[in-house]
Length: 246
Image (tube, rainbow, N blue to C red; front, side, top):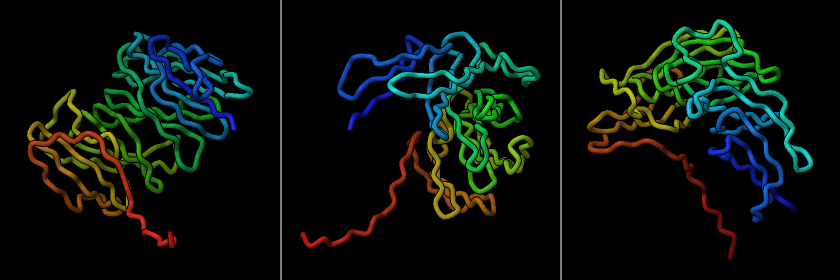
């Protein structure tokens, strides 16, 4: 079986297609800005156009791959929309990560100053915007609730997203009175196990490993990690060993 690899080429603002083990470019798709991440849904690829690295507006690109070639479906820059939040600067605030709504055809992305943008995956039209915390970086869904990771702020934000065109704020949960702009305070990755959200929160002196009850929306437990600055984490569930008689 033949496999291919997709490479995000930052300096050239392009997406490149290769056969595994081969250095020859099979196909190349030029983009308005560097693409930070790709996700696939219903046969289409979606990527965030960072924008800020190139002094242009961030945005979203949608494309397909068939027979070893790219087909661009749509590239939508945020500068093409009207009624954007007043504190969103399309030339200086870039996009990085995004996530798909688990049950409806919408994607959620955000920018550093804390605005969330909801786009229809079919047309890439903007259907809603709302405010979160500074350093808005990642999105996690739990039932009909969205949880945002605000890297440069001292709280996580929670929203009712049962209707993606009319998202409703639920509450913020603040973890300290400190706020360090430009410093990653909330871990890059958050994991949900049995209705609890696990993540790390940092101050200048230490990290806290936090267990947050998503039903009660309150901190259930935490561990202090002095003189540590924890940024990323990984989840590994225990696996029962099976005797195969070998």
